[in-house]
Length: 311
Image (cartoon, rainbow, N blue to C red; front, side):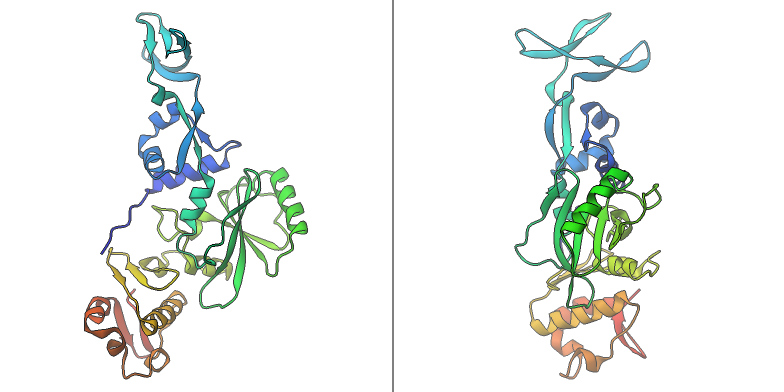
C-alpha cells in the first residue's frame, strides 16, 4: 500500500487563482503571507523560480508596508533602508518570484486519465491555451478532444479561442478544462465546446488529478454532489485500484483488469454487474485468486442485481 501525497485544498485554490491572473506569478512577499498554500506547490515543482522582486514587505511602526530593495557593495547584497536600523540585508530567497509551471500542472491534472501513450501536452496559444491528448472517458471506446484554457472570463481570450477552434475543427464537441470558476461572469458560451471548471471534476479536492467518471457525469448533465465515485479510483491501465480509506491494490492479470474496468464503469453509473458479465469461470473470487481476493473482497458487495463496489 502506498500513500498519496496531496497538495491540500488551499494550495489547489491558490493555484487556480494564480492561473486566472494576467501573469501566473506569485511574489516572495505573497509566499510569506500564504505559506500553507504556497509551500506544497513549491515542493512539488508546480511553482518555479522566475526572477526576483524589487520590493519586500516589512513592519514599520506596527504597520506592514512594501519597501523598495536595492543592491549595495558592488551588487553583492540586497536590502532596504530602515529609519532606525539603517541598511537591512534581505536574503535573496525572500525576493524570489515564482511562476506556475502550467505544463507540470496539466501533467498532474491528467495523470489518471486514459490518454494515448507518449502523446505530449502542447501549448497552442502561448500562456493561454494547451491541447491535451484526446481522453477516453468511461466505457466508451472513442476519445474526446481536450483543451485547457485560463482566463475564460476575458472576452478577448474567448474570441481568441473561438478563432482557434475555427482553424482546428474537432471530430466531437471540444471539452475545454479551465481555471475560471463556473460562477464567474463568463462571456457567451463557446460554440462547439463545453467549458468545465477543473475544481468541479477533481478526484480529491485536496489535489489536482481529474476524475474521468466525474468528468463524464458532468458532461452528461448528472449531479456529482457527494459523488460516490470519489471513493474509488482506478488507474488508466486498470492495474491499480485505490479506495478513499487509502488502501491501494495492484493487479497484473488481463482477466482481473477487465473485471475491474467493468465494475468501475458500472459503479460510476450507479449500477451493479451480474457475475455472468464479469467472468465465465465460476466466480470472480477464482479469477482474482486467494491473495488478491482477500484484499479486494472487503470493498465489494453482492446485490440482487449483481456485484458493485461498496458506497
